[in-house]
Image 1 (cartoon, rainbow, N blue to C red):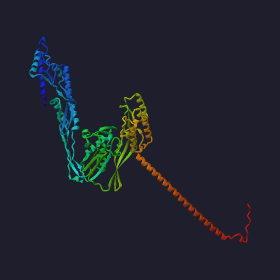
Image 2 (cartoon, one colour; image 1 turned 135 degrees about the vertical axis):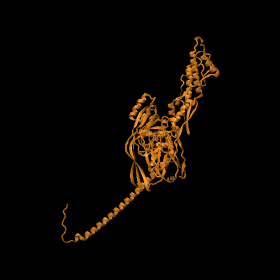
Image 3 (cartoon, rainbow, N blue to C red; image 1 turned 180 degrees about the horizontal axis):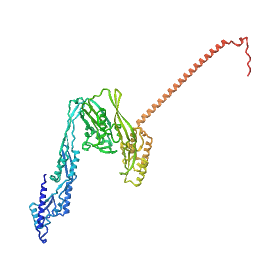
Length: 639
């Protein structure tokens, strides 16, 4: 053990002083022989670098407390080959062991018989002053915990050999790099010994004891077999507003997987490839699922990366060894087609079950994340795959309304809702376009999560709280906003993001929508009303909005002069077309009438000709009466 030279001196001095005091007790003198102290008033007794000559015990203790406060803020650094991490001495449990130091210092040269005081005075005369030092120590348990906690920042994961692709699509090697991990017990022991012996204030530094974690990978001739894209997957994501950090996490995670090469039989762990989820590793706080809620968490959004990779793995027909669905539905893939990860508990793993290495390529840009798996294609020509997601049951989520005393009065917060759902996914194999098999690949159950509208009441008048309670009971959103004293839609400064407006439409409307386009259109109108609300009363603004939303369709915007001109031209063209159509119809009707009249005339002539022919035939068979001589006709009665 290395000891501090000043601490050795302090210990020897304490022993000498104790012997002097003991000697003074044995050879006592009469009370009248105890004169007042002849000590100098300054420069005789020091606590480290501070003159404490003639101070009382309380004054000395105040000096000690101040020095300990300063020592507590000193930085102790743990450094590894490629990273460092810092703690303050206070975080390591610093204290001083010689707790009676204030008592000893305050009595130097003041107590004891003449001989004892003489020896102290003589010592000061020969050495200039008496120096005391704090015996600094740290708490072993706190040192160990600090070293253990620092590992997440100090450890370096090995980087296995990867392949990259150049602009020509040809592979190139990305060399492997060994990693290391901190050996906690050994490092904690060294750190404790250093702080209790060699260190006495100021910046301290301890080198961590590390152990190498070897990287793996080598390029063989079988890499040349990787000529076909076995499977792909891609999903879309938002990149702006409150989703900006989420987009950064997706890009970061995608880059960490890009270039991975797996040899036959190798297993890939998505969690291992992306850890640790820290800011030092390129991650940000962004929305993610946690215990049935959407909360900001470090690395939020990386599950979209694992789910997109899952789709590529399914298309490549690799062996999936571990996969979990999300606790709640996600929007970027169909039900039962997702794969979530969670540090220390959930992972997405798969094996290279082909006869050659596979290469995983990935990128994330412009709101799309892509994965492709390149390898050796052995499946027959004309064989294609399809995937279907089947919803077995659905439980509709509702919306809960609550007053929140943690939010300022005038603040309204919305949390999105998620339907509960049970589903299954299937792989369909086609050969030359004909279905030959259908395989169940997964079943998933997603919990229902009701939306939540939280209305702030902190510092609100009691009358407003009572009225808001009534409004919440009836779920009257317009009244809630009015009672909260908001301009419109909960944004006093007149600026409302489109994302928030979409949430407001979904929550406040409380009914099913036919499409996302409708929600977007209505949300745009919310923003427009919100921006113009400053020039009108709140009541008018809310009335206008609710009048519009009850029509179940966004109002048409006011046309521009160009649009008006185009509409007029279109209307004139329509009128001309209608006039031409009417004229054509009239001409067609006249032609039809003329044809009908001609047909009637022909029919009449035909009938007349037939009648004349019949009369002629009758005349031939029966001659006229005046030519008949026999059997004259009988007289007819008059009527």
